[in-house]
Image 1 (cartoon, rainbow, N blue to C red):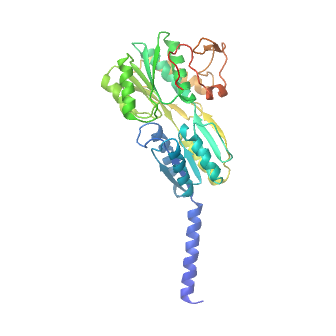
Image 2: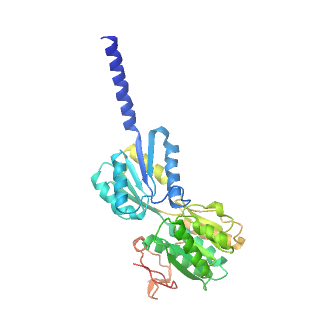
Length: 357
């Protein structure tokens, strides 16, 4: 064989080997509803993506698209990611559910993981965190610390996840302060700093001296800081730049272990469709540092509640609890089943106002 033929063969072999290595690299994609710098929901999901890179190094490539609107735009973005060779795609907002299912049917060899949804396929899993457990801890602190007895709540969309959070926070605020009142503003957005700031300001003007939020930016923290004498809680991430006041604690979504586990399953060929809903006990929900702005006895009470939830000793939805109209829901000692919680579409007794359609 001539030298040129040998070199050509060697180059071809090297090229094939390189291609094989490239094909062996697992590609993991993420579709985000907000920007990775939102300081909340998307920021924490992206920390999970970075944890995959740190865990697997060159064996994995991650890609992401941020600020993807829910709806038709989501289907286009997910499709593009699948066409670009992603092996596993995490779609990280409730409103991506139908788009995820539609794309998954077209790409049966791609694995999909949808956050906070409830529909699966052989190649679609769902995963969520029991955020309502963290809301219970926040509600306790809020009920103890309010001076005006008015707690404001910035809600995103009227879906069960958000309604559960409102109910859990209210129940635990009322347990420690029977005079507490919740004022709720529906922002109809996950991330819009201007809308969130306006909502916070409106609640403060209505007398709220505690602001809870189920939206993703730090704008409510900034509005509370400007107002003074108003406390807040970090949503999805620690939002620690606003501690010790107004941010006195937070709910932190810890996605990294799950993302690493599911990526490993794809690499190993063991991935199967599943539905996961973990909370404080499994570490998917964390309670951020409770600052010294919280009285020591209240802090101790909140930490005791956290531990009781983590151990399974206590469930935040334990009766007796009535529905908003006064009808019985849970009897003394009865615990809500997951099916009811996953479809929750009602307020508990004591919350005023109606849930929007």
